[in-house]
Image (cartoon, rainbow, N blue to C red; front, side):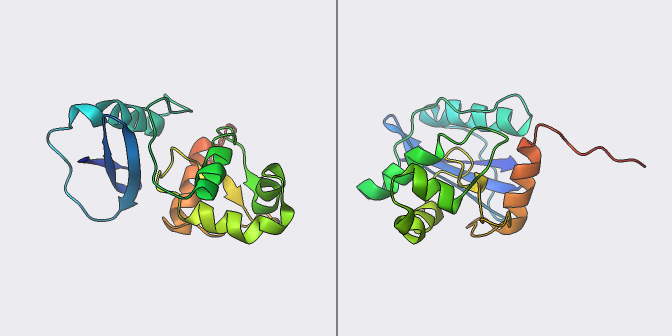
Length: 156
């Protein structure tokens, strides 16, 4: 397993993976930026940088997250939420075929190991509130604003 650290507008992202794919992407306020990016992580690093530069709206590098079959099903479902769109936890549970599984779906979202790439930040509360984001609600808000196709213009 190889690791690289890159600077993003939201902190330092740690990218972990190997030739079989990226297993984890996390963000924190700590960590030194890598001076050398392992070859197996270079495509992911490039695409994440392009995302933050508004040059990319989806990711094509290989993913290899570790989780239960149910968690992987939920994470795959998150990949169907388009850039600039949101879905409620209830809507997500419905798309997975069981509205009663809303808590389990929310729990699986919270265990998503692939920050930004598997877009759990696009899932919001039924009342439109920003809830439940492991990276901090301020990051969730920033990501949703970053992806908003109709950016708010300043009048002053």
